[in-house]
Amino acid sequence: MRTAILFAAFGTTQPEPLEDFEGFLKRAQEVLRGVGVFSSFVSPTVQRHHGMEGLLTAFGRIHDAGYTRVVVQPLLIVPGAVYTAVLNFCAALTTLRDIRGNPLFAEMLFGRALLGTPEDQKAVVAAFTPLVAPHLKDRGTAIVFVGHGSREGESAYREFDRLVTRAFGPQSGVVVLEGSPNLAELLPRLRKIAQRVILWPLMFFTGHHFKKDIAEGCGSLRERLEEEGFTVEVLPRGLLQEETFVRMLWERVEELLTHAGTGH
Image (cartoon, rainbow, N blue to C red; front, side, top):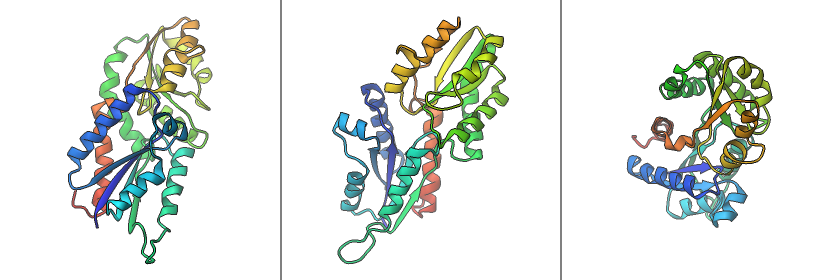
């Protein structure tokens, strides 16, 4: 069976991170030779903004190109509502048949979110360790990882927060823009130990939410922390700009491809 891989991301309306995504896909085509590489943004708002196709159209292209085995790798941080929606959509497609009664896709495999399992979370902390270490030489500096947030994925964020604090000390933590853990929970600890805060996006893309809710907007995390008297630095890099996490995605994909029997 011919195998295709579909990278499904929530998406971004900003041009710079879109270029990062296109660069990532180009590398995927080079690294994953012999496998068809496809992509889709799953956010309807993002699709309309760019005039891009959605999941259904992407699967149509995959089918029309003759691929019968599909590996779906979501570019999502936690197994929250969006992750579940993509999973359910893909599962529904496995029940469809063509006019001859044959399944449209003989096999479909689904990858994990970045923080999908306890083992994944530990691996992400390990990947961050050499990146974070130089910033923690100053004991007055705090590292705060910032995610989008998800009610269904709250437990994953909280567990990651626990692992981050254990690995990098009390001058580190995780907050999300929607839901919890949130800044109000972390502030009491920051007030005791930090004068400077580095906001580190726990996002694949530094798009609209990054600019408006973290870095620049009225009421952004940066503004709220500066009002508390902290000096704030915002790292303007999504995870797709970090080679460590790109390699981690390749490893996830290789696992799925091996299971799919492609020989990778």
